[in-house]
Image (cartoon, rainbow, N blue to C red):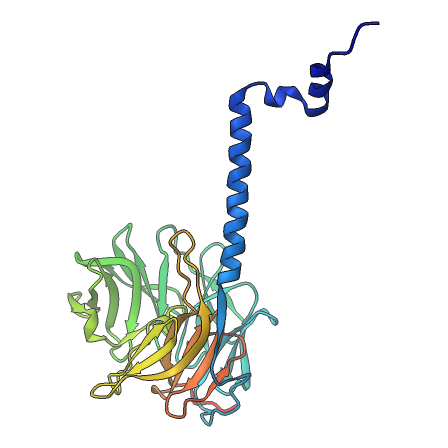
Length: 332
């Protein structure tokens, strides 16, 4: 009986084909080393990261005395957009379904939605009418009265104005030479003015629908732009009435008022963030004035909170705040 080859027996156990040469062994060792490094890095990251906490925060906003200001809130539990007060009181439901809210008129009776195939004009009756936009029309805006829709197409270099009631084309204007027509908004007070993105990040293009002339306006002038619903709370860190601004940091929010010392209105303790692959994730991603700058809404790790600027009271809002309604005077 022939003797058993020890080497062959060992190979049968560990599969010599996987280690048939030195390069394979080195590659395997390197792969294990990299995996070990990733595991260790994630462990260290978890140990060194802390979300922190808001000092003096309450679980609700029952302290709010303002019952007239209205917010549009996204309620994931109900799969709907709702109108609520700052105190969290339910007023009514705008729309159900898997639509993204794009813009809304001043009374929340008419709105523009984003569906999987484009934009939809809708109203409080529940009627839905698709906009025949075609490719390239990626930004739309509804005026405060809810009568006209503005559209911009940077690829075709066109700006269009439609009737909300009939969806008929009212105006078509070539995109101004200095404008970047992927972004369009109405003016807050002048019904014949549209705002377009400027090629320079330091300015906007003001388009007069009557004369068809445009003017570049510096960003620091804080023009009266009626931002669409999905961007409003990202562009309101400046108070037009007082000139105050909000400064966000890992330590909270500081209120800077003209002629006064900076004042902390939101304080965060215990936040630690490890820089992983050069990324830094701040605890507060947005902060915006609402209700004539009496209150500030801010996002803390994905949840929306409200702070009373004067009293310093802080409470958690219900749902994801999308928009402050302008000129809405109904009562709950």
